[in-house]
Amino acid sequence: MGQSKPIRPIAIIVEDDDIQREMLALLLEQSNFEVLQCEDAETAALALKMKHPTLMVTDINLVGKMDGVDLAHLARQQNANMRIIVISGRPLPRPLPPGAKFLTKPVYPTALLTEAGR
Image 1 (cartoon, helix red, strand yellow):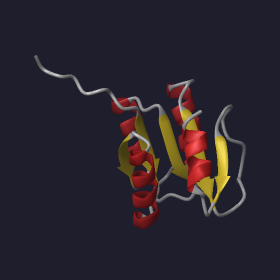
Image 2 (cartoon, rainbow, N blue to C red):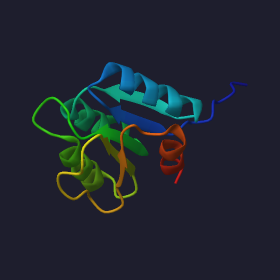
Image 3 (cartoon, helix red, strand yellow):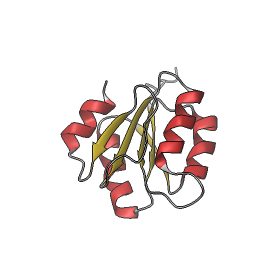
Image 4 (cartoon, helix red, strand yellow):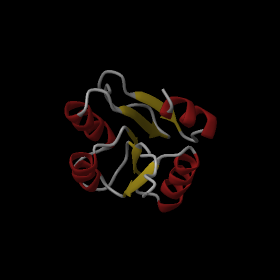
């Protein structure tokens, strides 16, 4: 009999800084998430459609046409129940969609994991 692996929740991390993205991915993988890493909002938008994640963590400042706030609104339109965490070293430029959480950099692992687990 084939043993089925428990399905892990999927998280998308959108961060153009390789090191920060890698650190966030490692943190979430240790918390039993399957993690998809994206460098920009356009790639993340595609991943949102294809993979249906339960969590998205995005930086505000991204390369490309969309920033993290735009991406958070897009994610909320696609999935009303997705947990969305927006991170930045700067103040929030405009309001986030309902239910999205803003964390300032540096992001502390415990703060991130607390929000990810809600």
